[in-house]
Length: 261
Ligand SMILES: Nc1ncnc2c1ncn2[C@@H]1O[C@H](COP(=O)(O)OP(=O)(O)OP(=O)(O)O)[C@@H](O)[C@H]1O
Image (spheres, helix red, strand yellow):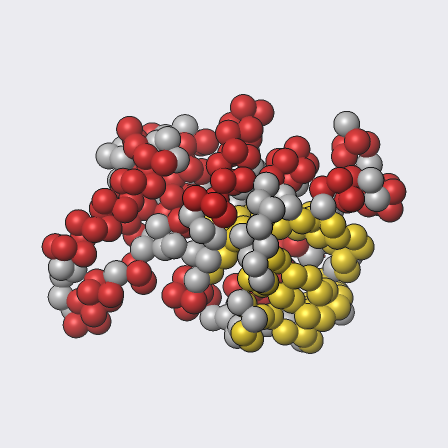
């Protein structure tokens, strides 16, 4: 975990979301300190995905505001990466017709200025840009321990490797805030432990803050500096893993014996 906090990367103030008569989020406020890993947990239907969707601009809140690095954020999904926020999806979600390396390179479209200009003018990317991107993507694959799969097709990869490729694709965009949507979903014990080690290291190695939604309690307790607990759209607890684990209301209402075990 990362003890050095130097400001707030994300702040939510009084977020409320209703879908028709259903209140999905009710006056949700929270802050995520820069350089930390923050977990959002809670039972099914608690509002976790809706919260991510608000941050990404997929859902517009009825009330409240979002601040990114102390400035109001009016997120538009297609501009998010350019602003410094990248989200991974549940599952893997790789392009099947691209190699692993190309998939990772595809995550960096907005960072390559020449590439952007070329794209706007309908010209091919400059060779230099392409080489730089390729090197960056290879470095990331190497750091995540999957360089040997660079030329493989996504359909041939073990699931856990695919998840890492998706993580590399997110990181190549150099996010300052990385949103991980159920990163441990579908992984087994050893793979979860390895993923936990990677996530804990992200703030230092990739210089980004991390926010994750996750049902896998072992991972959440291991990697998070701060945990926010939602139930029925409300924040019912927040604090360090130990504080949340010891909060009887949390244990009783959402996590039951799972947290203590
Ligand atoms: N687009 C939508 N239209 C109507 N209701 C929605 C919509 N999206 C979410 N909801 C409802 O809002 C509530 C919160 O859902 P949300 O998906 O955010 O919960 P969650 O905590 O992510 O659940 P899970 O852990 O099962 O993914 C649920 O009651 C859900 O049915």
